[in-house]
Image 1 (cartoon, rainbow, N blue to C red):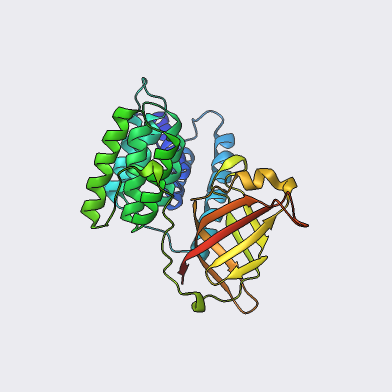
Image 2: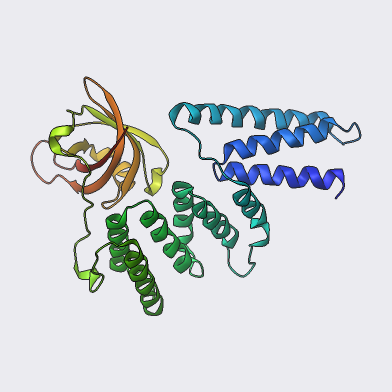
Length: 305
């Protein structure tokens, strides 16, 4: 491998690490590329490449420092790094997105569950990848001890008729085996006729402070990924309600009933705390002064210290 090929390979690895949120590994590779470029005076457009790398290194360092202040970074061992490098060989030209599937499976295997689920959800729209993506999504939730939410999500897919009959049988058999292995009691027959299961909360009503506002990232829809802050209009223990004006229809379309929202920030007059919530309802108000607006209800299921 000559110098040019080595630089290209390292840069591709850095970009791949960065795209999957593995910032420490990405930074290390960007710096390795910078060292290789600086070691040779014969590279065309050397200054331009170094300037581009400087920007990448600065941006990655800033993101890494920001994350370090919020939560400790998960270390990825050498086996995981090797597997991620091998993603280049996972691409199947007959199935669009198969490289993404390979990357997501690698992330899930080494505990990067949130990022893996995000990538896998994107693949549910592809016929050839839907079944494997769905199976891995369920596996990720069960691995995090969210068995009830996995059942709720499975029910949602069944109601939407996401899978053709032959795949429905396959994923039901897989999910039964998965839940049995995790020791979670469940009943998966005739799920399309049942209501979506609402996960139990880990906190008692009396343990939750009065909440004045909440901040979280939209989990889906047209404004997916956008961070929003909403004032609380009513609270009953672990249940909080917010009013969303009718003009914010895109906002309500981005918060679907049954969604699990992580990394929520709760503001109270005496403290700020973090947790997770389950969207229990999101309905249009059909009477009174708020008619036409939307009432969003979220159940707090976990408080994270």
